Amino acid sequence: MLTVDRLCAGYAGGTVLHEVSLRVRPGSIQAVVGRNGAGKSTLVHTIAGLVRASSGRIEIGGVHLAGRQPHRIAQSGVGLVPQGRRVFSRLTVAEHLHLAAAPWRAPTSGGEGWTVARTLELLPRLAVRLRHRGCELSGGEQQMLAIARALLGQPRVLLLDEPCEGLSPDLAARVRELVNGLAADGLTVLLVEQQLQHAIEVADRVAVLEYGRVVYDRPTAEARRDPAPLAAMVSVAAVPPPPANRPAPRLWADTP
Ligand SMILES: Nc1ncnc2c1ncn2[C@@H]1O[C@H](COP(=O)(O)OP(=O)(O)OP(=O)(O)O)[C@@H](O)[C@H]1O
Image (cartoon, rainbow, N blue to C red):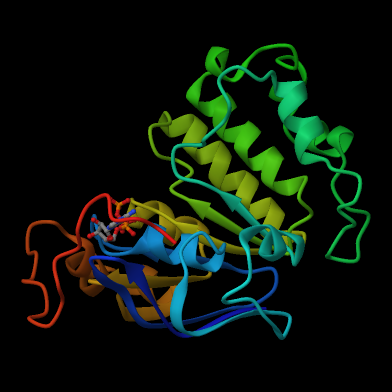
């Protein structure tokens, strides 16, 4: 179980996340949607320890993570597939996988754990690209590599930040299918998704962030029955003004 409880975080320019609370059951997919700048990546980065929480709790399996160093959070079983993939352009696929498959990382889920061989079985396209460098891969292949790299960290909780961004519809569907399969195997998934329709297709619950606040968090079945209120919340046609007490964030403020 991933529990985020009244989490506040932000940058030097001001608070971005305001008392965000979410509970993601093991083996389920929680989608987080919202307009640009709503705080979705900040939420993912705060859970992963890349942005410091100013208050609130983050727990997996009852272990409190907020305030720990990012590598400690990763060792506790949190895997991150960052927005834009962030693969190394000069390293080959094989080098990425062997770096990520550090032998001291025992499986945190109690199962057999992820090995390079097992990730290549799941993502066979990577097996034929092992000698290719990051910059030679297609967007879809880079995404598969980013997912493989996260799995080799033996996560219990997988954070995916817009994994389908920039992919063809076919590849995006393949990524969603993959994420679904991982959750069916017991992984807890928090999925930031730009497209509401995709979130509704794949997730068990959907939450909407608006100016760093959770303004909706319901089972996806409800959203499927009546998507109109949810669609209105993420539509760019009707952007509400920011709350008066929210300072405008300064771009390029230093992250802790
Ligand atoms: N490093 C940073 N320093 C200062 N402000 C930042 C930083 N990163 C993000 N912000 C600000 O925090 C707010 C939330 O940004 P965030 O990237 O979390 O939103 P998002 O919902 O992921 O947006 P998008 O859908 O465009 O990726 C925005 O106002 C953004 O300008």
